[in-house]
Image (cartoon, rainbow, N blue to C red; front, side, top):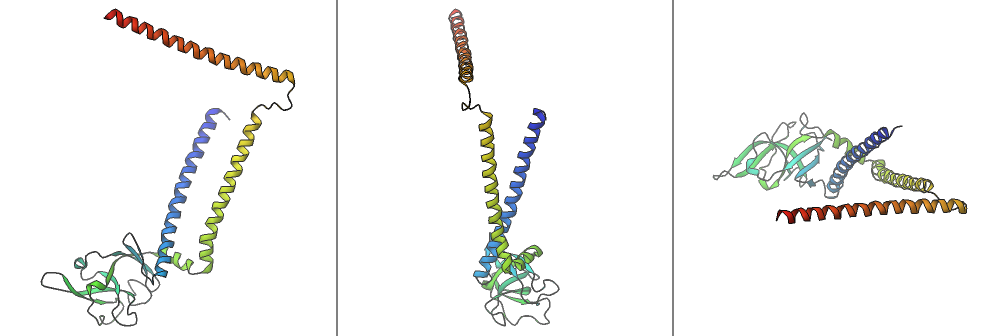
Length: 250
């Protein structure tokens, strides 16, 4: 293999390593975010957010036809309830009923406003329910507005619901990292030993061979010193010539 081919192969390996590292990092970060959301949501009773986005699991069929029971939705925190309108799907704390005090996701069917335009209360209803909810929802109970469903996160959460999901998600990455560290260490050690073999060793050399090696080293060092001296002398000559030229012009 020629030097140019080796150089191109080395460059291709570097590009491949960079690309695979970036892809691995992106996937790892995404999984960490989803896992953090899931654990946080489980520990906080079903409510957690990252950068203002919530991930909720729908546990009833009241929105069936739009959102099925067991599906996972992504919602955005509501900063201004006055901007909500009829038709929006919102997640809120249920003031009564079977889910009292827990998160419920229904559609807004009516917005009652005060004289200044602020929201007085909302009327909500599940798309699969025959009647509207029997409450006037206080705006302060609203948490987030529905954006989209996430089949991937739903599948991921179902996977984590099993004991082997946590084992694989924690043990497998640690095992991979450990193997990569060991492989990297072995490769570096082999490369260092290979480099040492290429360098001449004085062990096993005869006196004559040692003498020749020393003479070769001294000759190389002397040649380098002469080159540096000549270069310095040439620089001095050029500087003197420039100075003389400047004096002549003056």
